[in-house]
Length: 267
Image (cartoon, rainbow, N blue to C red):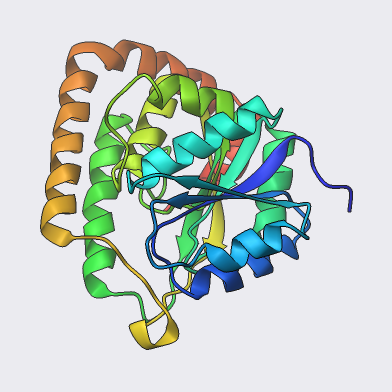
């Protein structure tokens, strides 16, 4: 496979532990350039990757001086990738929840529809934590309102291919969307700007702590941040965004890609 000069895999990572090297190794086998953004980790998880970077031309590791959040790490990676000529990035978790076998199908859809945001629609395993399942149902319902209908099937699933220029133009001027609110705010605001959302099914895995699973989500702090984000989005929708959004939705519904990827995955 010829290494892509337009599409890369972007993995933000904060204190992921030994799982990080295993995930990066698995991703490299898929044949795509890989950019890992270390978001101020202090567990030493980046050290094996820095050694691997010296012998693996497809791997680039960049480190942020302090932990700034997932969204900040993704945007830092997006700026770096754009400066080096890349146009799209598949963002995925660095803890192994997203199987690397899904990378190439998503990249090919992005190549076919370069102006679209290709969103993962998760196929959940039986061991998904119940609080995550019901929490995302609430978030998905709010996004349904914020988009005046269907468009983003799962707002919290971070396995996505972003058109980088659109992502940066939408979120970089803002101060929000820098932590766990990134996935939701990016999807909503990119849709508001007219970016076509395409939903593609992808499996997700959950690992116990004994299996190396890592989660830095803090339910009180991060849920309050999500509530604030949704409140701000709803207010902005009502007072500013809805006329343009209705125009965008009419264009989406006339697009064959919308019919192909969104109607067949409707829930």
